[in-house]
Length: 239
Image (tube, rainbow, N blue to C red; front, side, top):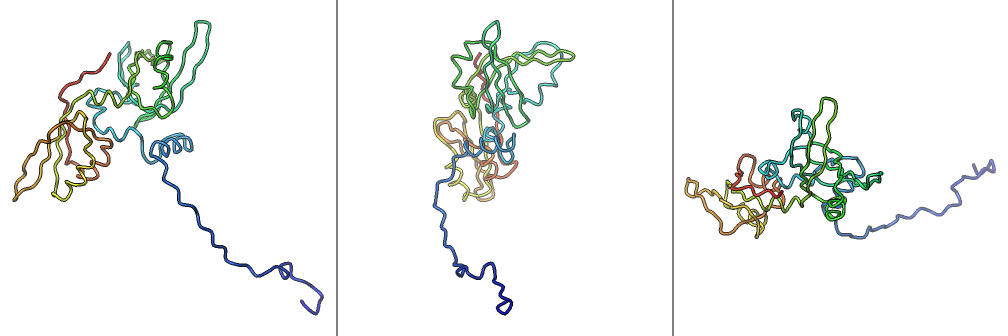
């Protein structure tokens, strides 16, 4: 190369030095923000759903899954649905304003029509993205069409809290008690009974007060599948 009067393209460059980059430490995004970003990226919740934390509470409150709507017989039905809001749009017509809210639950997603302007105005804060709502609808099933129209909207967490249940938990070891205590939040609606082993027998302890569970999925992961049961004590669902 030297004799042929040729020069290397990189010959004149200085020797590479090892860069020492250090990424700044930043706090982890809160769970609702992560889930919303997941939905916006994929169009659905890929790894976890915001409603998973309610566990069996939704079924006990007579909440219908979105995927089960098509199973209703022809006619008009009053049905309770629940989901997280992923979209909300307001439209104009000659008759006035109407809107569509898109809900997502563990079984799928659905557009629900809202023609009552009082709901649009007074419950607007519940219809924003990421809100978890319970919505009472009029379901009209026809041979070739299904109409779902909102009648009332409530915060989902409030509905669940107003539906008292007895939660029975079986612990395989007392060593789990400390972790369990962190998941039982005060001022809830669940009466909690804990079954713990004591000298080869199970002893049932009923805790004082009532508790709220933020994430039933985490609770089941702690105590193990089949070691948790819930029953409804009363069901004061609002109109």
